[in-house]
Length: 342
Ligand code: CUA
Image 1 (cartoon, protein in one colour):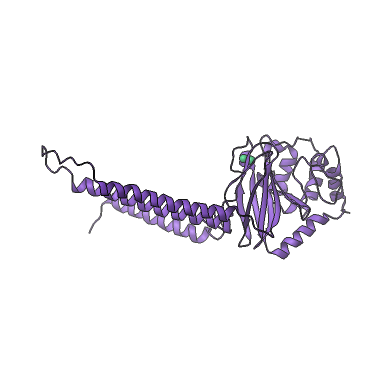
Image 2 (cartoon, protein in one colour; image 1 turned 120 degrees about the vertical axis):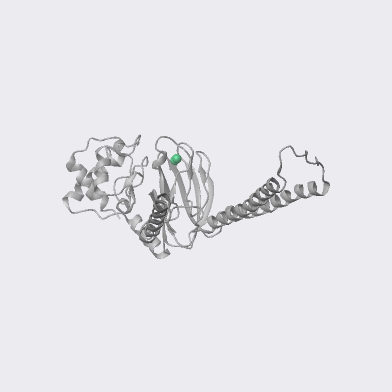
């Protein structure tokens, strides 16, 4: 059989598309991080939410198919077959039918209410023996404090796998929203109020989150990275953060630290544990070298850090950090020092 030109070119296109899609999946999927979807849960809280979503979706799909099916059945079965045919019999009022289509939705809604209530209970009941973390939203970055450990970090939240973590979520300025889709639902960070939430991460890995409430021009630059590590690794990380860096002997690093500790410069706003820099207005920079971002905006590389130090607002519009007109020597010293912090 000879197919038309149009058909065959469509067929070629379809095959090419299918092949490239399969190739893309095979080649790209191991490298591309899993999209941060609430439908791929990695904590019990997120699992509760995903399960509830799936049940609601299944019920809604069933209702949709049932009702649409009835409509299509009626449309085709009882359509007017010949022009000018008689008016069909006008029927209204069928008590058994009306009772059943009132009761059926009520039952479905009652089931959904029960399941929602149960999921809410599971998500909101705070566990005993949990790691406490204070989450503080700022324009435009996230601060994470571990009060029991005495450690503070920003943007990157390091947590132990298999341990419940209770979050006390608040804000310094406007309303933000703490959201790591694979680990739990959105929780508003509201100034003057503390909202609690909890989850337990089941598997080591990096989970992507984002501020989910418009909070000003820098709203898109408020990512969250949850780095879940085995418990021993978490304890080791805490120790490194507590001790802070050694005093450097290398002249470049020493110059970097001198700038960091200058009360007119970095130390006015930033803290690095174990140094004279104890400012509180900006993100804590202890362990900066192992953080994922510069300014919550671009990947943490020496080149991007150079751009940031040269003029933060070129990298992040409306960033609160001023441009200090640093010389390129000072920028190099700061990069060397900051990237050495683990
Ligand atoms: Cu903070 Cu949006």
